[in-house]
Every structure is written in structure tokens, then in C-alpha cells.
Image 1: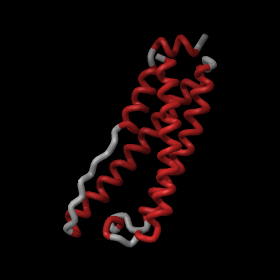
Image 2: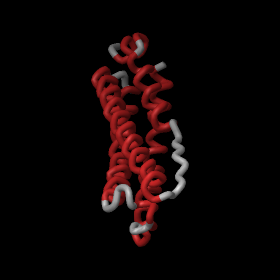
Image 3: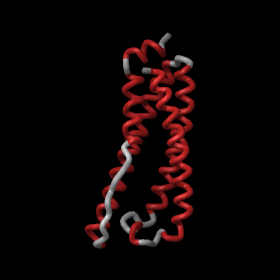
Image 4: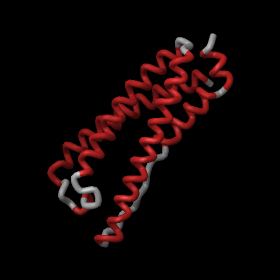
Length: 145
């Protein structure tokens, strides 16, 4: 189970880096159209929210890579740190999702635009799996050796 958690952490490193870079590219590309109706619910906060999301992805990629390497060396401290980092990251992702949904759902109500809110739950499922795998008794035993 610990090896599976390490592999999932490396998958999340790749997803975080790609997501962070794509968010920055999108941010730069959408800068001129930030006055469109799509950005009205959050206004100037749209740019900041996207920037924070990109930075969050890059920082968490670093944390995950570090902890994946340390857990592979059977570090119990790294296992606990990874569980904390994934828990905090999961909370950030849920807050971002809730803020995005709340802001975008107002588009239809206030301006008459129709918006279909969909999201990929990979960012929520993978941290939950890592937390579960690293919290298992076999992982505790493996990291304490």
C-alpha cells in the first residue's frame, strides 16, 4: 500500500506541474479578456484566484516529490508530513471548488447566461487515496522499520 501511495504521489506531482503551468498560461492568455461577463462574479479576484491556484499546484508538487522520496526511504516523519500536506491540499481544493461553483452559479441568476459547471474529481480522489494508503497499519509498520 505504501508503494501505491508513492506512485500516486508521483502522478500528482506530474498533474500539479502540468496544471500549474497550464493555469499560468491560461492566466496570461485571458488577461486581455478579463472584463468579459464570465469574470463578472469574481471581478478582479479571478486573476488572483487563478494565480493562487497555479502557485498552490507548484508548491504542492514540490512537497509531494520530497515526501515521496523520503517515504521510499521508510521515513515515518515523511509519512506523517505527507498525510498532513495532502489533508491541507484537499481542504484548499474543496474551498476552491466551492468558491468557483458559488461564483459561477450566480452568472445564470444575475445576468441570464447559462453555465454548466463540471469538474474532474481526480484532484479530490487521489489525495484521499494517498491519505488512506499512508494511514493504513501496513504503511505505519513499513515506515517505522
